[in-house]
Length: 330
Image 1 (cartoon, helix red, strand yellow):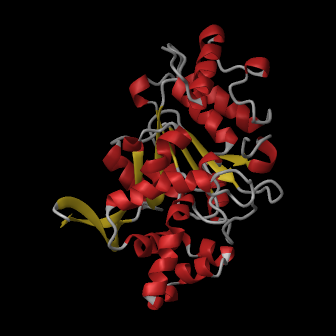
Image 2 (cartoon, rainbow, N blue to C red):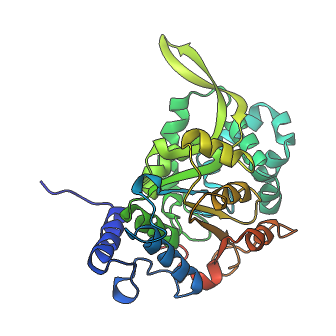
């Protein structure tokens, strides 16, 4: 009986083979990050992985402490034109507004219906959560979950012309595989609701759903047709963004993190990156800079908040334009 391996598992096995035979992250033909240009950023990543996994070395970190957490939208996948969590619920949002027109007065809902990308992005994580609350109100967890994967596989991203399920940044796909091959446990901490993100985490990122930290929609126990169900009540219980991210990570994992990945453009990842930076011992913080308008999108906070924080606290900035040969693999 043949065992089929996922592309992530194949990449991880290749990265592990490199480390076993050469004892250190390698370049050239055996490069575990082939879609990254040979820039100081790439070298910093490979040097860090090599140093924390070298037994007997001054920066060695035991395997149980090798935890990496990544934001999702804008860090692992594009967050424009809409965050991926909204794709499966677009029809529900339109239907909800048709039934209750006053819902269209919410800024994020109005922006989505008008296809105003700038206004939608400006609404931030709270806007995304408002949209999710509108879309899920009165629906059961099973009803929402069953729509996620089919729609992500069916709907194509307008810029990359591949299904949303295939829009993982190639460089981050390789990085996740490299970390997994070196004994890291990879997690996601996203502002998007876990009711959507855990339905796609395994297929898209090879990260099991129990390693998902996210915002929580209000849910209540109910009964329908003689069967117990959980029903969304149109509210958001907890927002996993900004200063709430390190709190959520601590509740789920209980330790400061060795590796953190976030992105500029929404201000939401700096707190968890600072919390990682202040751990006792080595750590690595990666801030994805959306600076490639031709191949992806170019945007940032108007006051440069995240990039300024990177300079102040010593985060490693990943330039899409300079550090990545490929944005989305085909």
